[in-house]
Image 1 (spheres, one colour):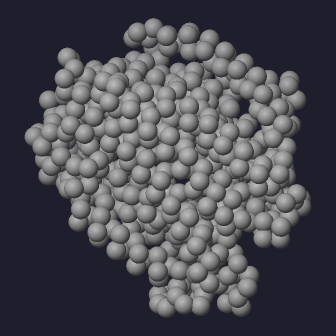
Image 2: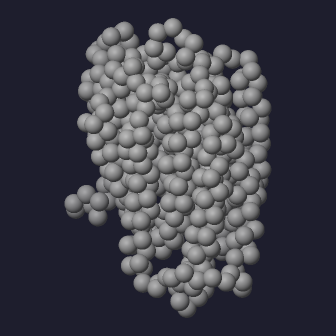
Image 3: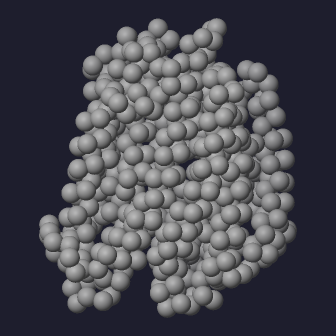
Length: 558
């Protein structure tokens, strides 16, 4: 990779990471406000979580992977091989995409009731009815998730990376405004209103309708940078002879991968929904019983290092992998994989340490503000610690998967996903029969963590078979040295957390959202300083590669 390409990659990664970080922070604010509004580990929280999660999973199930990993190589080829810069190809591709998305959205929305019944366990009639109403408001999001993804990939293929990562900021700002208005109008969570019978149409309109509005605006905002590409895009029909046949073959395998993976996640969500009904049988508030909201929120927090760093780096390096694969430059492919894995390890290993050590205070941010919040935070914190510890392995699996998609081989990822999801589904179904509903979500978290580890090993095996040794020994050595630094940072963070009463019932760290923020800020700084010092002491060269995108943007360092 040339110095110019390295600098370009660094700049693009920094812009994308910044956009993702801002979006994630705002997303966390939104999730925290949602818990204040309707509670965490509550009936209403789980019902809304179910309805609002289904559109994204169904979109990914039916089309998401096709847009996210197949389109970029096709658009790059069309842009290089056609005098119009790929305008005709992109116009026809967008037209076909919009038609398919519209059809999927209409059909799925019409089936809102049966879908809710299919994807829940042991829910009462009142829960099912309200879940269906929420779903009718939320399922139209499918079309706009797709529009956002396909337009974003066109921009990425044209090296306009920033917009795709910054557009979700619009969605989160709208959602935050909606939740603040909800709390002003209807107040914060109360156990007296935690039932479908106490819910009103006005609450549904504001909460579900406002959430969908944010997704709509997230997609529409990308149309402006798309128009500035100067391609003169417009609706065009007729898709014969423009090269979609090859893309269709790749898309078919990719679609199969998404169907396998997301069908499994729909099943996991269905199993987790039994906790909502099981909570009704527990004496007291039941706030210590983690449900689907807690599982999804813990996963969202645990994935922060992956979302901010790994996704940004992988998206930029995917174009480089595509070019290298197109010219059969396997040495370049191996070098990109090797350096990419070592670089992301700096962030993911530290992220895992933070998630394990600060799981309790982090969960407290999303447990609401009522008297049951500490119990909800404790349950969610257990999930976060388990999931966070395994997230570096998930990032490795994700990054290695880009090797095959860059070669337009979507069959191999399907094989890997089928092996993993098939085994995981069987175990999850057995667990659902053997474990109490009140403990099933924790069991799922442990299962996910184990399979993240296995997924990384499986992806390594398939990658070596395809491109040869990419220096896995060097990568493992780097992760071991980085791991020592992360362990040292964990010990420093645990000591700081102890001083804040993080291991005592009613301690300062868990009293309120504010005290949790203070605790996280202080302990996080302690961990970061310890981590950086240890990385320097251990002479971890990957630290420079990771910091380069940030340092290159400082005054005088460009």
